[in-house]
Length: 173
Image (cartoon, rainbow, N blue to C red):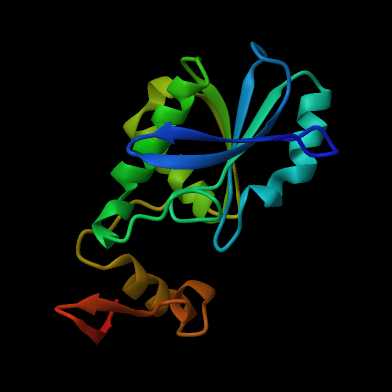
C-alpha cells in the first residue's frame, strides 16, 4: 500500500515474525534504517523519510517487534536484544543489501547500539539521538538502574507493569 505522500507500507517476514515497514526511495539507493523510540512507531520518522528519499536515499522505518503493525509475540522471552537485532539483520537481508546507515532515537538508539555491537558488518554508519551508549551492568537490572538514576517518575519506570507469572498478575517486572 502507498500513501498520498508516496510512503510505501508492506509486511515482511523476518526472524519468525511479520514486520511492518514504511519506506520511500529508489531501489538500489543507499538505505537509511530509522529505529523508533518508546512508545513510538515508524510514524515518528515520516518527515525524515520524505526528506532523505528526496535526496536520493532509500529510507526505511519499521515498527519494531511488539509495536504497531509488527507482530507482538506473547512470550516475554521473545524480546531480548538478540531477537530484536535478529529482526533487523533479517530486514537488512530482505532489503537485499549488506549494510545500511542507521538512525536511532530513544529505545531505537539502544537497539542501534546493540546492532552495532553484535553485527558491525551490517552497519555503514550510526547516528543516535538522545541516548548515549551505556554498557549493560550485569549486577543491576536495567529498570532498577534507571529508577536509581532518575526516580520512579522516569517514563520507562512509570510504564512498568505486572507480568503473568504462574497464572498470577501480581509479580512486578
